[in-house]
Amino acid sequence: MGSLFSHVAYGQSTFKRFVEVGRVVLVNDGPSAGKLAVIVEIIDHNRALIDGPTTSVPRQAFPYRNLILTPYTLANLPRAAGSGPLKKALEKAGVLEKWEQSGWAKKLAARQTRKNSSDFDRFQVQLAKKSRRDLVRKAYVKEKKASA
Amino acid sequence: MGRFTEYSVVGRTLPTESDPAPKLYRMRIFAPNEVVAKSRYWYYLRQLKKAKKANGEIVAINVIHEAKPLKVKNFAIWLRYDSRSGTHNMVKEFRALSRAEAVEAMYQDMAARHRARFRNVQILRVAEIEKKDDIRRPYIKQLLEPGLKFPLPHRRTKSKAWFAANRPSTWA
Image 1 (spheres, rainbow over the protein chains, first blue to last red):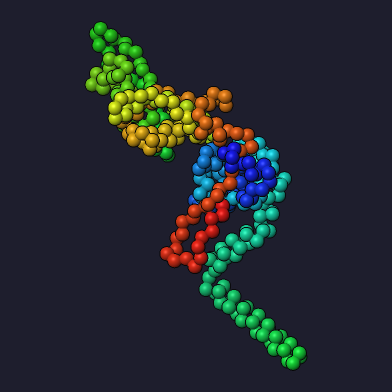
Image 2: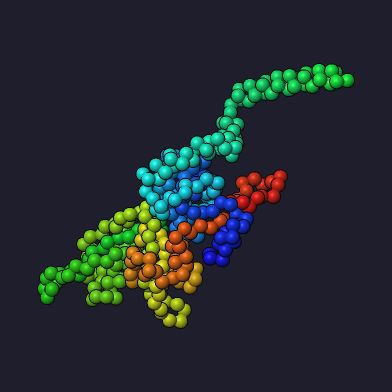
């Protein structure tokens, strides 16, 4: 493990996201899928203890293969912090708000709405796209004629 | 509900004329269910005392729940196992949330490294290691470094689709 960090010490690591205490992760599997949690303690090479008091992820051991590391961390989070202090740290850092505004979260949300859309919703999207196409093409033709 | 539950099994030999009030013996047994727990109780008691199931009785069997199932603990397990050519003692260390989870990891580890089956392994003692200095094994010590962090290089995801337009990316 020490040799793995020598390049980090020089500030030249090719890796940007680390499994560490305070790393915010996206749960990818199970009943809490799609929710954010924080790594509270590293158990071993395969599992971490995660907790998401504000996103209703119960405190539990979770394997890394079902987690996705996000670019957000809670700095100076003590190892094995309790749910209460963790909640305060989360609110103070405002991580969840930053997450909601990120492109990644927006893409996930868009994927969900598309998945949950009804036929009528898709019909409305079709009409909206049609009208946008119409306006764009009319403007294009007008510009072309004007510059010709 | 992992593979093992810890039971507290209390039993004694049946009272006879020469011994009207036999001693009660309690054991902490790791087993998948009560039936196996009672069976293992007699197996060990036969080795330690002059008692067998035929002239004994189980007085009580209770589940021992983990006191702090959300606290990560370091366990040391002392065990005795039969290899193909002899029987040996070992001390193995595990990081787990409960004693039963550590025992399950131990049985898996023994099966993997030594091809030792459940029937060949006897647990002598399971103890939580309180102080970091008492840890013997480097593979556990390395996880207790303060400020430990590591990346997840080469993430391998399972594709649910039969075909994929692009090769997968292995970022974590």
